[in-house]
Amino acid sequence: LPILKYLSEGDELEFTVDNPNLTVGRDAKTNRLCVPNNHISKNHFRIVFSEGKYTIIDNKSTNGIIVNGRKVERSRCIY
Image (cartoon, rainbow, N blue to C red):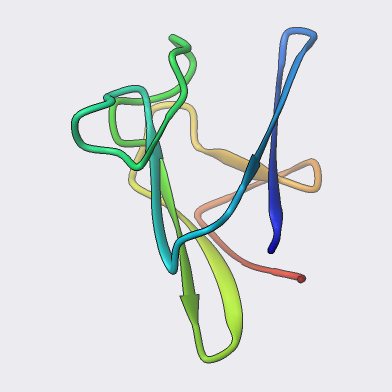
């Protein structure tokens, strides 16, 4: 299974992507993975598994998502 790495202000967290539709955000009630950090939107992004590939999709969050150092709205993930 792929690993999601979260890096912010010296913090590094790793999460296993164990769901074909993983939602990530600050709100524990509406997301499968809750990241309690003010830089993360309430419903920040999701990772979807489809056609044998993972895609990370920004949910129009305030700060966006960064994949391999680039800010993106959507990105196919290599796994």
